Amino acid sequence: MRKFSLLLVILLLTVAGVGFAQDAPTVAVMTPFLAQPGTQIMVENFEAAAMEKGWSVNVIDTNEDIAALVSRMEDVALQGLDAIIINVDPTQVEPGLHAAVDAGIPVFGLDSGAHPLLVTNVTSNGYTMAAETATYVVDRLSGAGNVIMFIFEPYPPVQKRGAIARAIFENTPDITIADAITPSFDNGPLEGARNAMEAVLLAHPDAGSIQAVWAAWDDPALGALQAIEDAGRVDEGIVIVGIDATEQARDAIARGSNFEATVAQDFAGMAQKVADLVESHLGGANITQVNHYVPANLVTQADLGE
Image 1 (cartoon, rainbow, N blue to C red):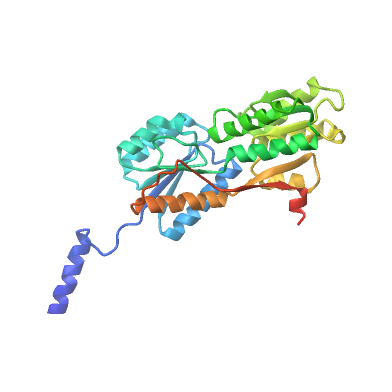
Image 2 (tube, rainbow, N blue to C red; image 1 turned 45 degrees about the vertical axis):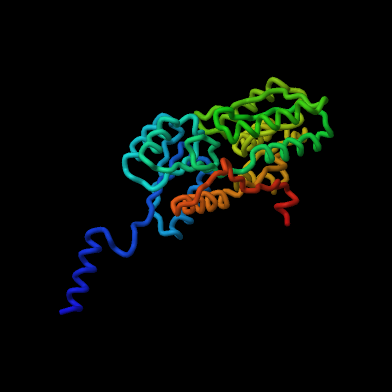
């Protein structure tokens, strides 16, 4: 009888929500950029890290629609989640951030940008990556030549890269920025950059009129490479660099194309870092650092041949 009574008490406590185990955290990952290779890697690795921690993860992608992401954030804020991870410029989704914070849901940036409404942001150091690739270009050209830049101002991590690269080029007297282009995203940045580079090559038809292409991420670099190869101007030795070290970029560098260097961001490391920070915050830790930087490394053909 006493054993039966004890079992009954345990059952009643569990039904009443006073059980011995709490529900696992539920986290939403929200982005309009899931089609981008770097974002895919981060999200997949975050899901893997969350699974190891026993969390439930809901991935929401709005296919480059920022307004739709804000709306979805406002909806998610009503669902009582434990945390939200965003991969988007936080200044573009402030109404969604306010909705989440007002609901008591902490929001973390995953390669997004610092913002007062975020607990913290985990990213690579865009200044360092841009400095490495821009310096690579300057050194390869012996400090002289015309450079085409592919930039993207609306996204803070990428905007930083362009600002630093431009500063390095402008600080080199015999380097000229022939054009700074924001590629169209209508059919993806790779195709947008290819079309833009085709126009550049038509505007500069003489061999040797363009010495280098600096791209703030790999897709525009790959698009520029396609345009140069299609135009039959490979032998001019136009140097191309990017950032992210996607599989396509690595393949192009490994085969000895005009695409010579990129920077390998540790996307898996960023995903693990933000998962650990979410866990710490939910456990009561006070996180004061605005940005947490995960190291990145320059990648050339020599590195891929090892």
